[in-house]
Every structure is written in C-alpha cells, then in structure tokens.
Image 1 (cartoon, rainbow, N blue to C red):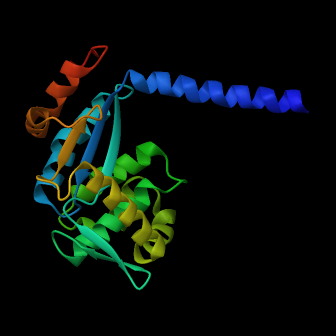
Image 2 (cartoon, rainbow, N blue to C red):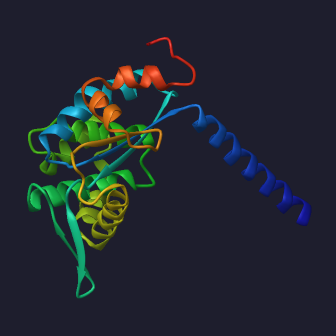
Length: 208
C-alpha cells in the first residue's frame, strides 16, 4: 500500500514539475484591468485576444479584474468602490466568478472574457457570451456567484493581488510581462503586445 501511495505521489510530482518546466518557456502576461474601462476593453479585444489565439502554447495569461477599485470589510461584509461605479463592481465580480470556475476550461474562460469585453455593456452580457461558446447551462451558477458572498470574496482576493502590484494602479490596464513591471514594456504592450511577445519569447514562434 505504501509503495502504491509513493508511486502516485511521484507521478503527481513529476507532472507538476513537467508543467512548471513547460511554463518556464512561456511568456507570462498578467493584465490588471476593469470590466467597464474603455482602455481595458480596447486592450483585451485588440491586443490580448489575437496574441492569445495566435500564440497558443507560447503565452500564459493571467487576468485580474479589479483595477482602481477599493475594498473594505464592514460588519463582516465586503464593500467595494469601483472606478466606474456599481455596475463595474458587478462586471468585475462576473468575470472573477468565470475565472475561478472549476467546470469551465481555460479556453472557455478566455473566450468569455474576450466576448464580454467586446460588448457595449460587459456587466449585462453574460448570457450573450455564454451562448457564443455553447455554455448556457453555466448562467445560473455564475450569476449566483456574482450576486453572492462567493463573488465578493473572489473580487476582494483579486483586489489584494492588485494592491500588491500598486495601490492604486497608475494606469488601467496595467500589463506585466514575465512577472516584472517595466513602464517602457507596459507602454509598448498597450500598443503592440505581439511585438513584445516576439521579442521576449525564449523560442521565437513562427507567427513572429
């Protein structure tokens, strides 16, 4: 029995190590954004979306929907003040719930966020985007998450991650490449993310 457990442990550790080695060769793109921010919408739909689709296996994307919001716990309940008002708080919660949902594939999560950010009102377009990826069955669960304590907790966690970068963010979206903020790279990535990825990728993909 102990031998079996040891073998299982070794297999798990080997797979984790292999994934880490694989990720080491990827360009890491972290985007700290807001669901109703025009600059965030423009960056995600015109820069991040094509790079993510064209550079599969080359990039690893982390999305953090919070931006210049603030959060405080009052009487055991999270209170949020969002840059573009209460509707943005809800939109941020919807995307937080999507990103942390265990039943959605990573590809579905990205396509949902890209779809939402392409809509005139991302906070009101969940069903529209779920229909696009044939995941209508997820609507009730995600809506319940965004309207409840789960959504509050997820957004607060994203808030903590954002505050660890800078509080408040100087610019939204803030784009961090390979886990290190660089203002010059941020400025370039906002206008030409593909050029940045091609330059810093350890192995140059053919699309460069």
